[in-house]
Amino acid sequence: MTDTEGAGIVGVSTIGIPVADQDRALAFYRDVLGLEVRVDAPVPQLGGRWIMLGASGSPVTVSLVLQKDEAPAGVETGIRFEARDADRAHEALVRGGGEVGEVLRWPGVPAMFAAHDPDGNRFEVVELT
Image: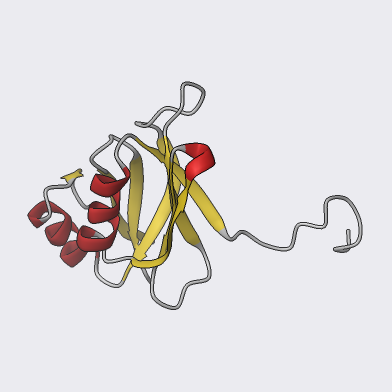
């Protein structure tokens, strides 16, 4: 299928994460995970802000969107963040007050661990190979 067929999807730009408190979530994703703020603008129609953060040099971002009844916080996001060193990332999340699981290591698989943000949204951190 070419980009002129179907919906013409050509990439992924941002992944929404439902949060209860945008300021608290922004502090976690910026200060603990180390993501850079790309956009932080008010959206009065939605009663919050449009906040996008991404890893330096990465075109993909996460958007911290206010939770709604049909999209509550505290979900499995399916996001796999990359880290150069899983142990160092794990330590940084522990120091930052993040809820983290143990670093898992299996033969032939990169080291990884599960973590939760302050709203209970789950994601994984996977070491680059």
